[in-house]
Length: 168
Image 1: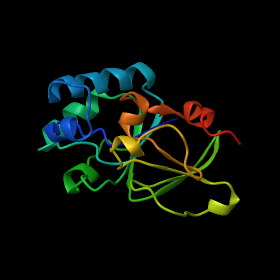
Image 2: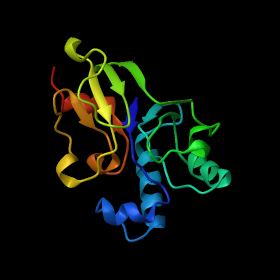
Image 3: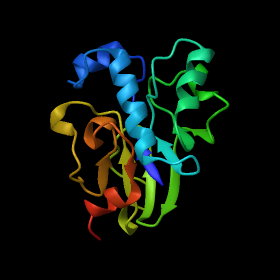
Image 4: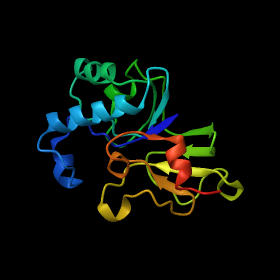
């Protein structure tokens, strides 16, 4: 089971805005696809917490998604418009999800939120959306952690990696 977000495939502006270490969109796309597939197997489950990409047409969506391993569930981000949300390759496409994992209950939403269902009963919140360096990292804040690609070396984070920075 893996978690990621804010891949922004084909988005040239994100390289500068988020200070990504890539010289071009092509380099960024290829690096993220390679890193994704090095960790995720074809039968693994991946929760993508939004902003999949700036992909301009159905054919381009298919090209990128067909290269990614795993059964991918999309949690809608602010850049995931109708074309992205309705892509048939998603295992599911939702605004919000709650999942049980080996590391406990996770509440999945694109944006960081102050409190969530189960907040006072140990549920943890995974989010994406934030790219600024002061908001990115693997240090949990009040049972909330950022799974955007900048925080996890441009690859999905395995549930065990997340659990390791979140001691019970």
